[in-house]
Length: 120
Image (tube, rainbow, N blue to C red):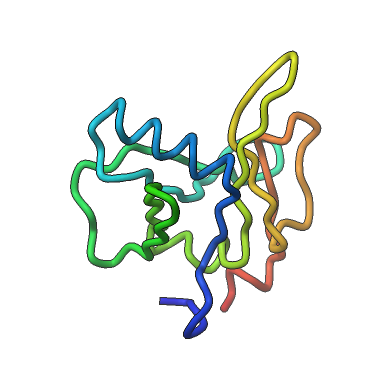
């Protein structure tokens, strides 16, 4: 929808691809759908849901057995994002390295986009 021919909407690191493929196998899902919704202290939050049916309007990225779908309304906000999976002593989880984010809260769960992005 908002893509550039020959360029994936998002990139997935090998660590994220491994974790997504593992989750797909465990849950028996067809992939993970990522999106954004209003909420959090900075205004927006990422969402991730298991997918049992693939929506033809979703942008799909497949890599190393992992399948990520991007919800139509989130595509402009997520274009160019790198999805990583990080493990530390205190926590583990997906990290979104998104060039479209102009501000994030201290905990990293809530984000803000350039107001001009949503006006496009």
